[in-house]
Length: 325
Image (cartoon, rainbow, N blue to C red; front, side, top):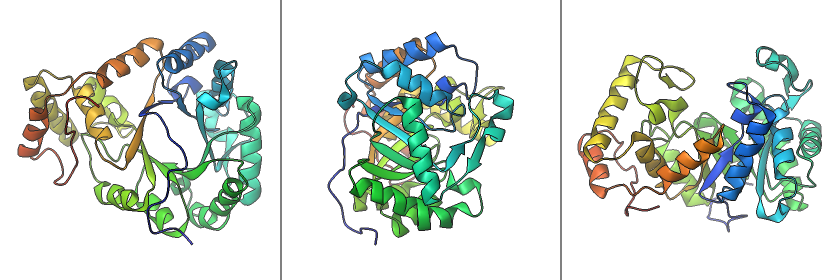
């Protein structure tokens, strides 16, 4: 039965982590040297929490992560990968990725996925396994509850992995997993950001149960990093006029306080006490440096007060209480 009271944390992760979907050529072509340099720059800067998945480039992300971390002390790196989206053909061109992936949330599928990931990563173990995107297939939720999560719990009990959970772009199904499985952590992408706080009640529930939250997509597909404009994306699609207008209002408040929108987005997302890490997808060493600079830039407390006064944050959303994270 799932726990209903806070539990001891199964592991500690850095406040910032590296999301490796971009280095798997999920969005744009990235060379092998660039991918390696990006991962190594992240590690050198202390971003020793790396999130990957078989789906990212049909195995390419895991292979590149494995190659880049070779030679680093394994116990100083926290590796997270995923199960449920099983690779059948590797390194396909982007237009054919779906041909190389099948949904499989069975016990056997979990074990096979883990074994394949260990081979691609060239490691003996990973620290965390997440059920990946079960909301994309109608039968996957029940299969995840009945088979994938029990299989992950067995691996955790055996000491093969340290923590289990799920990762996706919605919070409603994660909330069901919190009630009907026994997760340690969730990776939630895009649903708790400076722009959108729809998951506030879910985060509060996770906090009360001791379930760690890692946030991905904190820039909402880039619009909170680059601002509104004709090419701005939100939730992987062209941003609507309503979204563009809200981002413009957020940016105007930030500008009045001399703070970049991206910097405010990072600090806000990290302020909820349930959030233990932000997973940032990065493609270049310069992007690593830029994100770290934003992270270490103080934000005046008056900025948060103005955002609240303007009604740009959902009531009850935690904001930073000091100027440095």
